[in-house]
Structures are given as C-alpha cells and as structure tokens.
Image 1 (spheres, rainbow, N blue to C red):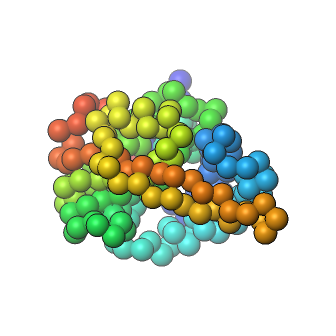
Image 2: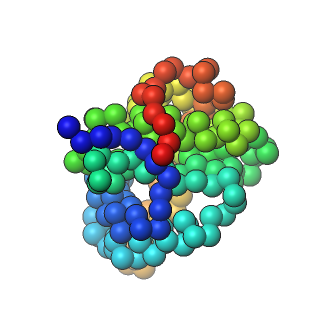
Image 3: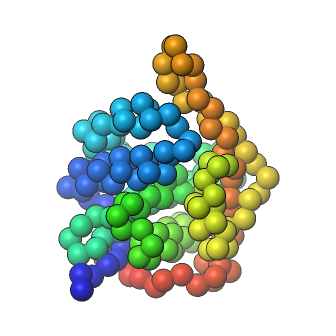
Length: 193
C-alpha cells in the first residue's frame, strides 16, 4: 500500500498543485458558482500562481503543505498570519484546504489540517481561522468535527463573471479554532518530512 503523508510543497509541485486546485474547486464550488466560471479555470495559470506563492510567500510564516499518496500529490493546505481586519498578531489563517475529489475520505484532509495546526502553533498563533462558503455544508461539518466553531464573522465575496450576467456574490462564514493543538480533538498523527 502506498505511503500517505504530508510534506512542505516544492516548486517542482506547482503543476500537480494546479491540477488538484482545478479538480477540487470544480467539485466543491459546483453548486456555488456558475459552470462557466469553473470551466474557465486554467491549470497553467494556477501553476504560475502557485510558483509565485512558493517563491515569494507574503510572510516568512506562510507555508504550503501537500498531502501525498505514494508519489502523487492529492491535496494541499496553506497557512499563515490572518489578513482579516480584526486580526491580532497571534491570529493565524488557513487560506486554503483542498483534497483531490478522487482521494477524499482517506484521511488526507485530517492530516493536512493537523500539520497546518502544528505549524500555526510553532509560529506562535493563539487562534486560527478559515473562511467557508455558507452553503458548503460538507466543509463546515468536517471543520466543526475537528473542533472549529463559527465566530460570528461573515463576508460577501464578489466574483466577477461577465458584464451580461453580472457578478456572483458568495457569502462566507468564518470558523476559528484555539491553539495549542491539544485543545482540539485528536487528528491523525504525522511527521513533516
């Protein structure tokens, strides 16, 4: 059986990150965003964005981790300081957490979340937050089962679509978890390598 785990992303991973990005967003946002927006996702553009993110992280505390199954990248998480207007210096944020649809329900999301929380704790964060589309019940249930809870914050994201169709507004709620990680329910153990 191939070994599963989590490691830091490398620049050689950008094409795989982009492919997972496209497949996971097309699945997760299928009932949230119009199909033409999802159909327009271009893995080549996303690979360039991933390369930029890995080579020029916004801060030294930003980190991209990937879930691997054997030699295949099957998911990713990004963690760093919170950029929310009400955030303090000890507030961290998961800006993304995705698992390839063909590899879901195999523990990859739990391993990624656990590794991200370990990094957040090592970086000195007291809380970590994540934004979740209000209608994304599966994601919210997963996070809440791991000890995350709504903190009453919400925001409306405007997704530019076309001049004819207008903009799409996605309401998101913020979930937060306190650190240190031992305050959270146990997740799958892992070692970063």
